[in-house]
Amino acid sequence: MMEENTKTVAKRKKDEITEQVLKRVQALSSSGDLKIHKDYSAENAIKSAYLILSETLDKNKKPVLETCSTVSVANSLLKMVTQGLNCYKKQGYFIAYAGKLEFVRSYIGDVFIGKRDANMKTVIAQAVYAKDIFKFNVDVETGNKQILEHEQTLQSLNSAVTGAYCIIEFNDGTKYVDIMPIEKITTSWNQRKGNGLTDAHKKFPDEMSKRTIIKRACKVFINTANDTYDEAKSMEAEVNQVIKDEANNEELDINDIEYEEVKEPIKVPIVEETKEEEEPF
View 1: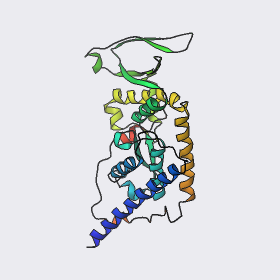
View 2: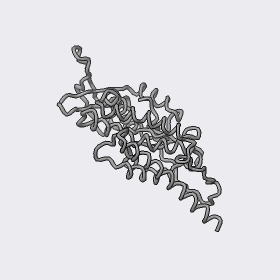
View 3: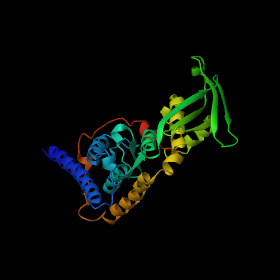
View 4: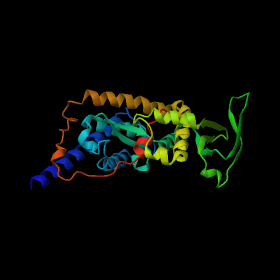
């Protein structure tokens, strides 16, 4: 009976956090302080996020809802909403750092924002292998890179990855090309907060290289996008301050739950994707 009551309390507290964040979003939206992106449902995104959070573990294989502060959980959900992203669509991940939960945008989220706010039409990345025939040059007048030739065979796909490139085509027909050798890609991976390479980086260097080059190629355009994205970043900073200011108020003071009393915590393996996004680009 005690176990059942503890689980019921834990579920109720989780629901309270979701409701409090949603109320805050609705209040900010109603006052005009937060502009929700068109066709974006904050309620659906928050509820989907909490389902994922309920099954997310930290590096010690403990539920993040047990080890992360209530305020950081609310803060991470708000960061997701201010960017108009949905973690159910793999547009971002929730990762625990030293007892605090953070929302980290994924490469899919970068592409989504790029298409929404930065006039991008398509974003295509390819890995380059040692036995490929690959040639490119730099336009001396514009400084833009151009792919002159890239030929692959089934045999070359079995050789080592030597780099990756990304081609972004914009709605006005212009294109942008970014290229990275594997040495720079590896340097990027080693700067991750997770310190070093995950199994995904070691087993699938081609796919991970493409994700890295996509994030770097999109970054400059996302960070110089129109006011839609600028407003989201500004709003994120404001929301962070609101959370800090109200951290001890009754509205956000969701009492810590003694999750360790729950006899059967959710045990879901850590998904490597929650780590592979932690790169400088």
